[in-house]
Length: 89
Image (tube, rainbow, N blue to C red):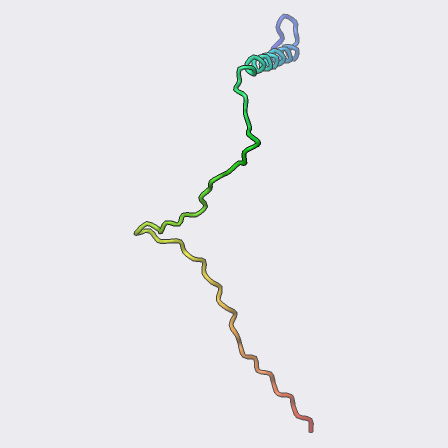
């Protein structure tokens, strides 16, 4: 908390300090802005990225290669015996 100085309340001093700092930051940005290098974007050339997602080289000796995921087993086929219909008498 800022204490009052010469009869000026602390919240006025805090506001004044904040105002001075903000004006200083804005003034510094306006001084630096003309000296900054402009950014040039060429819109007539397409953007091309070269990305290697996989490597086709064989694995190094001594290191295991990639493991294939296990294949799910087919569902078992069970023979269902249908009971014979009773013959009418």
